Structures are given as C-alpha cells and as structure tokens.
Image (cartoon, rainbow, N blue to C red):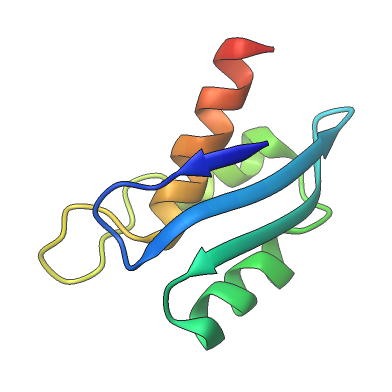
Length: 81
C-alpha cells in the first residue's frame, strides 16, 4: 500500500502488512537516516502496537512527524481492510 503523507518532509510511505504484522516499510523522501531508522525498528512489529507507540509524535511545530504519519497510514489500512 502507498500512503501519501501530510505535513512531513517524506512524501509517501510504502508498506506491506501480513497477519497484522508490518512486513515491509519504506519512506519516500524525508530525512533518510531517521526514516530508515523508523522503518528498521517498525518492521516485524504488530500494527496495533506501532499505532499505540507512534501516534502523536511531533517533529518541531508541524503537529505530526514521519512516525506519526506511519501510525496514520496503519490506521487508514486497518479502517479499509
């Protein structure tokens, strides 16, 4: 699935979920070191746990962040599957 982010340097997040587990995730754009780190830590984790841990994380005064946008992407996936 591809999720178009809002309010972050990353423009999109590509990810795959299998049996409630985030199997693969890649941020398109953004701060490469940070997004690769978030992706590496999130991969293999249960979607529900990631939503709980990542929701509400802010980057400066943006009101969101790449981790928060990943949580939003996962919530969107859950709502539509």
